[in-house]
View 1 (tube, rainbow, N blue to C red):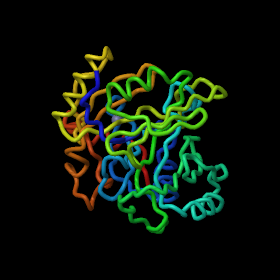
View 2: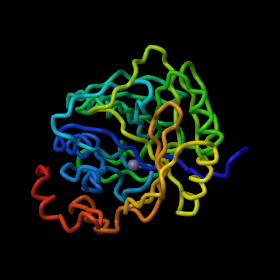
View 3: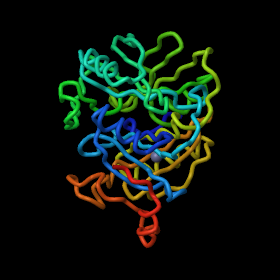
Length: 313
Ligand code: ZN
């Protein structure tokens, strides 16, 4: 049965890091993203949850981290969201390659993927990142940055690549239960798009037999969140996934959005999150990232939580 699930693309992607200061410096200064929310891990309020994105903290631009100082590195591999790609303007990779060389960012040479130029690089924990200089239109605005000129700036996510030993069951969930369609295939990589397609909607399934089994730890992805427009589409998506036999969490209020969680058949943790209400609910758009955001049940412990968290500057 074909579905009506209105997943419109990627919402946010959450990864695991070690040192929070090093993480903040890399994503804001090196990559030129905006620090849009400083919060805590709701399951471990002594540690941060850090969010980076565009100026407006738009869904489809948000990369978030749970940083634990001293945490050992994981191993990117199968059974994980393996690489996270950002969209940058066509012809911008020469700038980025020179920047990575100047700042000693670990990176590969420029390659071609589905006709676009791609450069793969790593963050300080070895998280696998990519910049896709796409020929497709991407009207999303550049994030203002004193370090990265607007002509080269990241526009938001391009795609998430899942590494799988066998893609069949995952592809079925994407296409039969989440509204994705197959758009391209090349070698071990198959691309799926949500909604209208374009940068920010893609999921690539990679079945490279050379890849090891992934192990969780610093420098690996924790989960991939997809976006839906509102609460009603979230509830409809949940009902459809349940009807397909997946084990899906209840709707959880994350303050900035409402979420459901489930594991796709290869074990990657998926989330579906609402576009609203967004990140400007507990601080103004101008102030984003400056005040510690806490869920209501932790607000009474604010003083203790703030005192226990490491300083970021
Ligand atoms: Zn999430």
